[in-house]
Length: 347
Ligand code: NAI
Picture 1 (cartoon, rainbow, N blue to C red):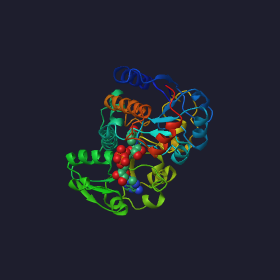
Picture 2: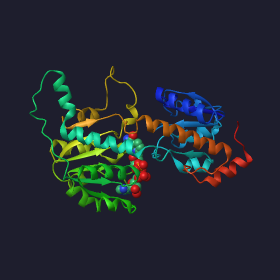
Picture 3: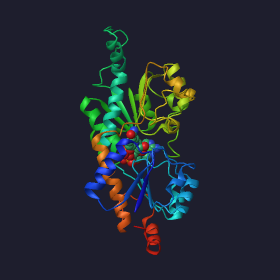
Picture 4: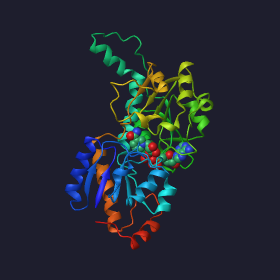
């Protein structure tokens, strides 16, 4: 079986090859492509049985149809989010699609807390000052987290991990999640979004990007937040209307913003653009605020998470090849398996 990995970085090669050799030695031959999957690059999947993609690869209807025409039968997402995959088309084509739903919720939650504490205690500014021999602490005043109210939007795996950490800090916790289970109640109170925004000193986004959550943070909801509060987004960029957030920063309604994700990140993130003129004026405006912290989608990026991602990705592929029902499948499995009865995977 031949697997093509798109958007491959050195760490993808290291971990996928390591895990393949140790646990699935006969599963597949792997081709690594540094560029992302798109209409232009999809012909590279010709002759492959499976492809492996990441968060900023394009898997719209046209790309999925092209993949299918080139003989690809399995799509492995080495990430949790699948908002970038047109699942109805994948299902109609009988493609197997599986993700890695939980590789290390703690890794992302810990990163969200790291961003909040950097923004709050201004350690990023202190670091720069001290390196220049400036030990002045004026302008670095922060707030004690203990006793503050933290609002978590989406208390799934990552939101719950964040709740556990903030609980340890001694924060009061609120959460908004229309589909929440019982687990959050041991840490705090489930409330409506308006109440969460009104009450919270810190708002942390951990819900998926869907049609219903796109621009969840917009001009109207920003008007309801507690003035001066901090907003952190380690989920998906599309949850925030960036233009509206810039306005809220200008009026000081929002006291600070930390982003690990950005709605137009696909054009920029995961690549070095330091020698180029960046044309995204919205992002460039965001970067001018002293109280905005931006990272390039690295919340997941720990050794433990990479090992888990590679393991689950190849285990998903192994399930597909063996015809075993895959617990991480995102499409109606019966359809895929039935199709494979008549058209076996090339090994
Ligand atoms: P999950 O599926 O375990 O939890 C998501 C939660 O959001 C669920 O409890 C769900 O009920 C809730 N939710 C759904 N619609 C909602 C709405 N309209 N309002 C409020 N809550 C809503 O997902 P998990 O593993 O916690 O991941 C959350 C998100 O984090 C993913 O969708 C992904 O986009 C992002 N992520 C970011 C990473 C990074 O590196 N920055 C890495 C991994 C995930």
